[in-house]
Image (cartoon, rainbow, N blue to C red):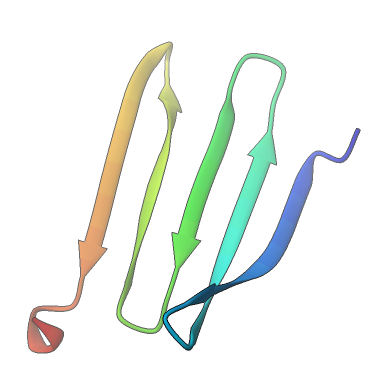
Length: 58
């Protein structure tokens, strides 16, 4: 089993980077673009979903 996997994702003609990081109790998933990212994972057993977008790109 790979602990980390990265692969490109085609989003409407643009490429994003999908990242998966496995740990014994959870999996972190993130998709990053040149404008920001969205991710989910866990911190101390609680679930977290986060996103970031540069304000100039809105």
